[in-house]
Image 1 (cartoon, one colour):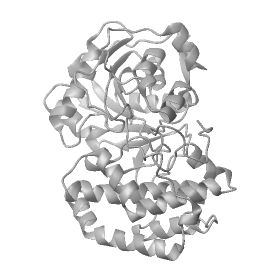
Image 2 (cartoon, rainbow over the protein chains, first blue to last red):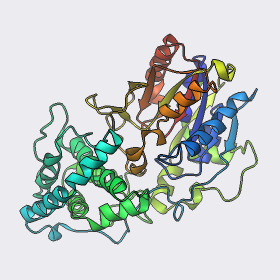
Image 3 (cartoon, helix red, strand yellow):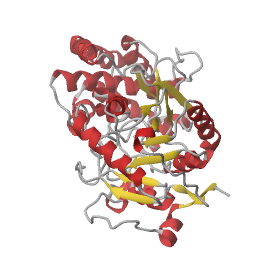
Image 4 (tube, each protein chain N blue to C red):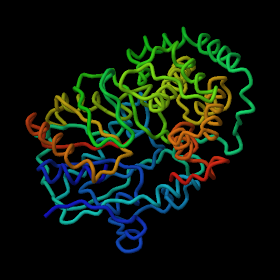
Length: 253
Length: 177
């Protein structure tokens, strides 16, 4: 992001950015920067809070009034993060193994039932918001869980999406599954709590458990890309954990 | 002449760390992050800028603003971003049916699911334009893959800049995820 600012500036466009890692801003020196001490994924601070969002924008745009730079300023408010982590993290000890899989059909049946029970609330959320972020994979909601279950047998299933291999598609399917759950719950229960959402989906739901089983399959896989997505925390949220996933070295980082 | 090159982040920290303004001592710091994230972020090869440009901003009421996000969002049906994509996607100021195909999972998705303005504040900018706080909102806005190396993005960044200038944009609001 900081690097992009320099390209645009050299094209005769004035830039202002907001950013989460102050040390990076200090090192790359974009012309005008507002440091945000917020959890990542919340650049304007708070959803459905136009006053707060506009405060962020106004403080950022205020930097366009400076005559020289680079200039970096700290936003006037902090949204606390938990234990120095800027997003939800799975507990390091919550790790499943391939021995925990058991009957794949039974795992899938549980997940399907769980998702079906949320369907009306999901549709209510979509209707209320007028949009959904589910659909990055391009698969129908009913296709998501069966596609993941196909990996639990230790094989790489064929991708149903033309032009996209199965493993990159798998990542988007995982995104869609989580979005289906969190879009539903944030609307149904009128809550905005990223820690609670992460805990509910990844630690308590049947679908989260299926994904931890998928993680176990990935660790045991001979496929380099499957291993990479767990080594680099590209599927389950372990980036902010205290230590790498057991069985991996986090060498990808 | 302006150049952007890579250099080891640890070297930069040792040699060139510059606190531009006095900072509060309680801010979130890399050194206090949990182990995996700390290791990754502190070992990133960051670009180093030689002879940076400075474009003098126009007055607030003349600003035509385009958002550049690194959230890897795009219109539903557009090609998903690859994991280290160098290219960008454009979307219109009225587009709301966006999906995210970012490779990283370390940031919260639940906020933008609730309100697009949490990461791409198109409605806030429109309100500010309607109130005369800014000049106008650009027709097009842009998204890149934030996980990719910015040094590889020069060509696409300049392509986006060309489109912005055709639209009369003079100010870019860069927003990470």
